[in-house]
Image (cartoon, rainbow, N blue to C red; front, side):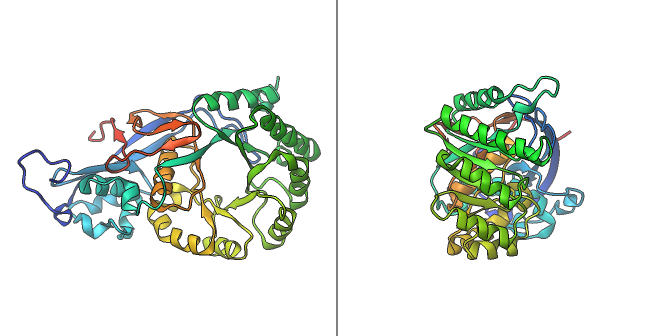
Length: 373
């Protein structure tokens, strides 16, 4: 029987479902603390609002997800057969339905009684390593009485208690907030302090393109004994600097990750093919699940890993974990500490640095918000 139908109703096939309604609501993310600055931006606040969309079918099916684009024209999809919009083996096949990418994946999983990661092939593991992506420049706040290194370490301790065993430490203070040399020294001090306080945890660092190549090489030398797992967005990607960086890292295991900001995917693929990038980071939602499904086999052929950018929304972290479990080729996922009002995420569990992805249909997430208003 198709999930969502009452007992005794006739069984209908996937192709018999038509879109009955497309409903929209807003939900609020709440971080456990105000998240501070990075190399380029000011305070990231205490949590944004985001748009979610629920698709209902004329046969009683329903699925929901974060909106993946402009919803202005999606009302035109009402009455369309679901199989004209979405192929479970591919994803969205109708451009007009692209903003419903996640809602349609959830719908397909629920109608077919499969978790999304199974729709994606089940190539990974449901025990997905993840890292804490919320270690920002809180040492610099407030302006009138900066809290210093203790603030960063306190945040790490709080997030360790949430189950994280890897921390992505923001660096690049000298790009905007401090004098360049003083900022680089502070970046080094923060990295070393986190390593000393958490000797058994992975450390990743992210400069948000806030370094020059020369400065990032100096930084890496200063933290050479800190076992940095990956370096993210050290500078705007270009071959010359990436070659210098790769040569500098030749005797270390540090991965180079890029592709989050305004990604030129063909160029990124070329850089990966040339061995200059190890991990690509296009955003979970703005790049989209359907596009990730198409791209991941190519990355695997090139020996390039993926970790879809998830910062901003805890729901994006859960989507990224489904991608990791379904498509494989993801070393670890970006975690966003926090909750989302009106969403039951209890099927996902974080234990000792691992996010356990549920085997429930769809994304395993229940939307408790009234979307019919």
